[in-house]
Length: 59
Figure 1 (cartoon, rainbow, N blue to C red):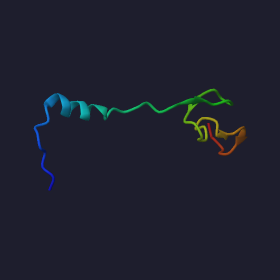
Figure 2 (figure 1 turned 135 degrees about the horizontal axis):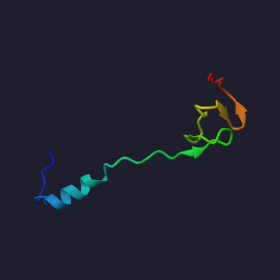
Figure 3 (figure 1 turned 30 degrees about the vertical axis):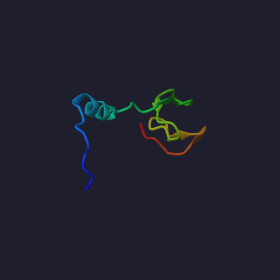
C-alpha cells in the first residue's frame, strides 16, 4: 500500500476537508403562478411545465 512520505499538517489536512459544504438548489419563478420551483421540473403548485398543464393539481 502507499505510505505517506511526510506528515500532513493539520492545516493542510483541514483545508482539503473544508470543501464538503452543501449548496442551495437553484430556484426559478414559475411563469404561471409565480411560485418558486426547481428548473426544468413541473411546478408543484400549479402543475404547469413549459406553458402547458402537465399534471392536474387538486386544491
